[in-house]
Image (cartoon, rainbow, N blue to C red; front, side, top):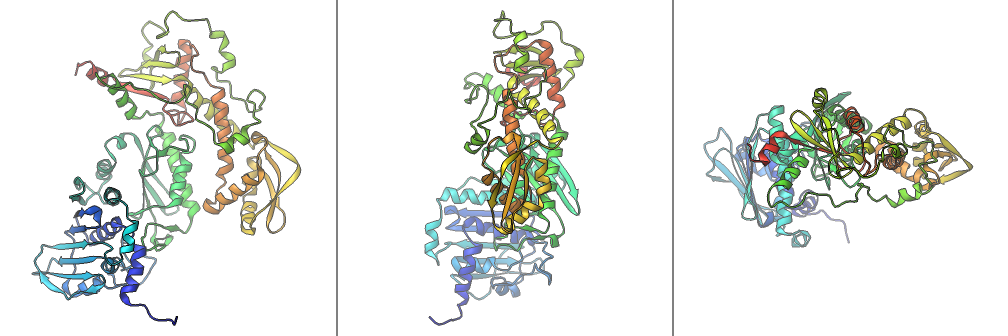
Length: 613
């Protein structure tokens, strides 16, 4: 077949396959155009999940009648200067409108502030009409009907109306967080109306917009992040560990105001919460990165959702460090949702409030971890759990048989006033041989003794492990691991860091490394798989956290075995000592498995339960 020039319509349809994946893509492109035009009100209406109709109306600057033909032509834009690295607008490629017009029925009606009348143009399957006068108020109205009618094969890949509507809602919410001063309205026959009133373009206004999108629970269950390094500024909010989700859909990231889905940012968030959340739980985050546009490439993909940083290590380090520092500074905080659930359980007719998991909250181990952990004996390990006064070996002296009451035991006198002023208050009782009930001046606190002490032992054990080089065990015969040459080079560049964790490696020819030592804590391990995992991580993130995470998981399990067990009777002074250690330990609001260690119920909530308020 001879080489020939493709038609303009065919070129646009090919471009549409990259830019316009589904109705939500259309909404994203049109709303971004409205915001770039300075709109303060954006109204979106859909029908049939967006396949039948998408209408976006704004009050922005509008498009002059003389430029409407250029607006629907490829690679025509008013947003890009002569420098491709100086991108400060949401759109810049000049592909969205012609791509939409090539696969749908597109109509644009617009009026500028200085014009006496509006003008409109339409594009149907790539065929452009003449510009004609119309009646409209200031701003632009874009209507897209019968999406993909010109490429019906694409319709087979669309999901149901509900799924497409949900994707559109998610797009609006993600954009709205970055523009609190703009009012967004999303409506249609296939959805309930979403109305996000404008707030001030201030930190307080931004927080109110975040609450509109993510719910009123998030602000009070999150901490503020504000950090910077070498020209990169990071701000936003992240949830406390006890307020998490089963997926990462509630993680919002923005680079210079642009919503992005970047794996480096997602990985940094996961790394920052690795010590306080299990692998199947995810933090709720809203993070804004601001940096020189020349330091980030947003022209990676036509959809503009992916970015590339010139210094990814700097960005990752900033995110991980800022979140960890913020969590440590926030101290111990319970999620308010736990108190709400507890209060709801006491209301007449409420279902029983409980947890379906195992009694001690242990989760199943990862099979790969089981293989590495199989030879571990906490009783013989040089890294046995630190004795903090509550370990199993010290418990026998306190076991005096059944107590007079199985439901409450502690001091009956008035608690010390200084303890009432402490964050977790004074211990007043132990119920069901597992829960410590404490009293503060204005609340009731219920502590899971095993989960709380597990976190305390884990943090102390980690500090002991990482405060000095990890002991290593020398292999009788070095293990040679074959790798691509670039992976071997990356590993060699991190050899000093790896040696601190007890892993001794060196280059062995152009495409291999020799492993001479492994961390003692790992016991017998699959050295080849460990080295390959580290090589993959270094290639992705330029870090060696995989090894540290394996060691921390062992420390977590050791802490679990060396903590105060459920069913262990505790003296009042022991309970108060546990509360004081919790207050002094960052991250003690959750156990190693991500479950909350305590719930706080305010006195005002208790009074409401009894009808006193």
